Structure formats: structure tokens, C-alpha cells
Length: 365
Picture (cartoon, helix red, strand yellow):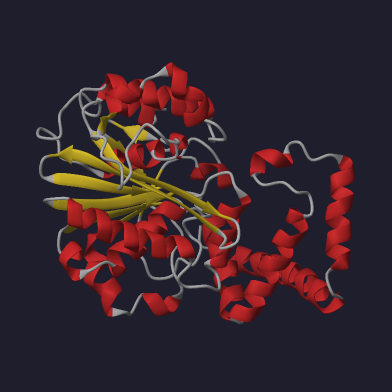
């Protein structure tokens, strides 16, 4: 089955011949996971924009790909983009990358100049850091989260410096930030946005969907989910979406390299899987029956136990030894008894809700 790397290798048409579409958005969203410090200029840097084709420099690979998930696939994507007549002349600018442990913020964005009249603003999704994952979970009780506010500020700032049409997008949390930023940016910038792409990005709390800001951009949002989406179905209640085939299963379908390409587009399927619907229904039922304060308490307690290992990223957990699991258990026991009971009960409730929702959905098929 072909993926986005095959698409980049095989799609030789320029953007004049074949307009920018959803697959192009996913390609550039995935590319924005790479670290471009000292390669792509930021807002304050007077260095000219950088062609994608000029980023193929082996001496920078160590810093570009340090800590990046799917290292080999991302490296192959860079090689394919640098050789592609469709992508190699795209210019990149306004690169921003911020990580703040105190604010629990992980944010990065970059702007691609597709042609003289069109720019694509891409927001990076969740990286390997626990700060990034914690911020994702914080969306369950906090709105806005710091990266959403950063996204709005970035779009307003970049939009004022750019001419022509704007396309906004991202994968995972980046897709959520793209929608939020398009919703909250100034009207002058918003009027120039022609499309917003959310690739398996989490949704929003119910209160967002009836706001004038959301309704103004609703018809420009293109949400795409793999068939067994978990991340993209979080807080998913009112957004419309298209479903695509993935070559992997379960949570690993969140990997954009697993999304199947058919010709010059995604391989679309009819429905989200029952597994994903069951999970979504259970989570939404749980969220509807618990206050924001309780959500925050649960999430903080979980991450407090993880922090006891001193791991800063998911990769660090691979180096966690047996003795560190003892630390995790000890940290959990050290949480006050009421919180500990609440966390344990919450986990049981989620399991019960999932099982309860399992049978009705399965009976439909």
C-alpha cells in the first residue's frame, strides 16, 4: 500500500496544474515535525526564506531529527521532497519552536510559500515530550490551552506579513490548533483563509461549536481521520469529517505514514470503525458526567506519577528500569487518599463505560 512518501515521489505535477489538496497538507504537516533551528528563519531573522530542496544537508541531520518519531520515514520524506518538482521549490519561513515546562506548553509552527498567491501555515502536532502530551490532556478541562493562544498570535503575525490566500493545517494537536487559530484570528486574516485542515486532530468542548467564531469558518474546515481514530475522535461531537484507510491498527493509525494513498488522493472509506466509536462514546459520556475540576485532578494525578521517573519524553521511558516503576507506584501511593480513590474509580468507570457501549454498536453490523 502506498503512503505519503510514495505520493511525493510519484506526483510530479506543479501546483498550477494540480491545486493544493488534503494530501499535500498532510505531507507538509508531517514535515513540520522536523526541527529547523538555524535552518529556517523566524520572524526576527532577516535571512531569506529557505527552499525545501536546500534543506537536504547531512551535516544538519543530527539536530533536525533528534527525538523525532519515525526517524527513517521522516528522513525518506525529506529526500523525496527535496527531489520533487512539486515540493522542492516551496519556500519556508517564520519558523517558531517553543517548549515551556512551567506553562505546560509545546508549540511549533512554520509557513510554506506554495506560490506567489498562496501560503500554508502548518502547526506541529504533539511531539515526544510529556509537556506536549500533558497539554493535549489539558484540553479536556482547559480552554484555551497555551499552544492554542500561541497559534492565534502566530497566524495574526504571519498573516500581516503575507499576501494572498492562506491555508492553515496540522496533524494531531496541530490540527486542533489550526482550527482554533482560524476561528480566533482577526477578521482581516480570517477572510483570506480558504481552507483549514485537521489531520486526526482532537475536537473541542461542546461550547465551542455554537460560537459565531466557529460558525464563520465551519464550512472551510476539512477534518480527516483514519478508520480507527482515537486521537481525532477525542472531544469529537459535532465536527464533520472524512475517513481514510490506514495500513496499521489501533492507536498506531495516528501515524500519517500509515495513511493509504490511492492515485493522487487518500483511499477513503465509509465509516469510522466500531472500536473507535465505542471509545469515543465512552469518553464523551465520561466527560459529560464529570466537572472540569475533576478532569484536571485526574490528569494531574496521572502525570504526577509519570514525572516521578524524571523522564522528559516518551523516548526516555525506554530507559526506565524496574526500580523506576517502584517510584511510579510509590508516587501514586503518596497522592492523598481521596485523589487516589478518585483516580482508581475513574479508570474503572471508563472501562465500564467502554464495555457498556461495546455491545450496542457491534449489534449494528
